[in-house]
Length: 217
Image (cartoon, rainbow, N blue to C red; front, side, top):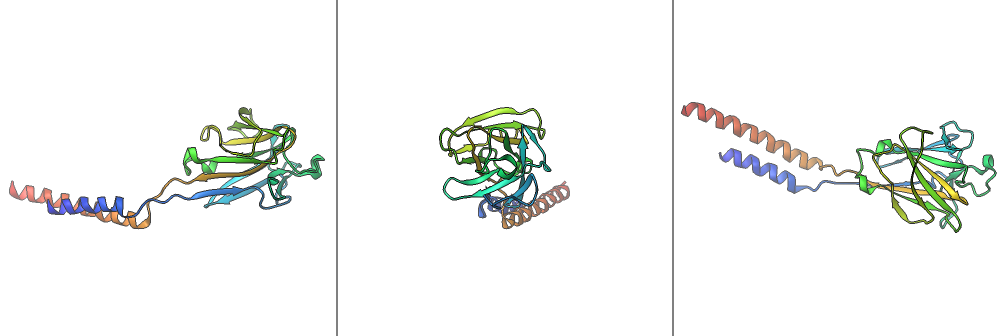
């Protein structure tokens, strides 16, 4: 019985000794600046988790789309991901009513706290406005999710329901500034070690208890 109590105590200590950790993720879409390496696609990594951005034209999004992405780092609110103006004729290199940006967030699902995924738009001087759409197929049937005309932080709508999100301008031209999230808390290595010790002790105590019971019988 004493061994059993010690094992339980060790397991309890494991749960309390070292707190679980979670990381804050930041995807800054103004970097790299200019036209990224890919024609119409670019990956962004934070905390070891990678998401992918694709350029879109008339609702169709392909990694090899001739119209490329553009990382704008102009300072102030002129920071974020837009579309290469050399191909669209837009000198601002931003998201327009025809050309948008698609995010593939599959790698975030199951690894971040669902309610922690937020996005922020940039370059939304009136009358600029934007809309977020969702789909589970790239260039698929898009579902309108959230309209806006500000640069505040917004929860990514219906996260976990959709793999792809498209960001478009419904008026003027805008930028996709950033995406933030928090990873799911994971116990520290020291906590795992204490838990394993506790489980091992519990197993030994149970075996000893059964043996004592058989001898007594």
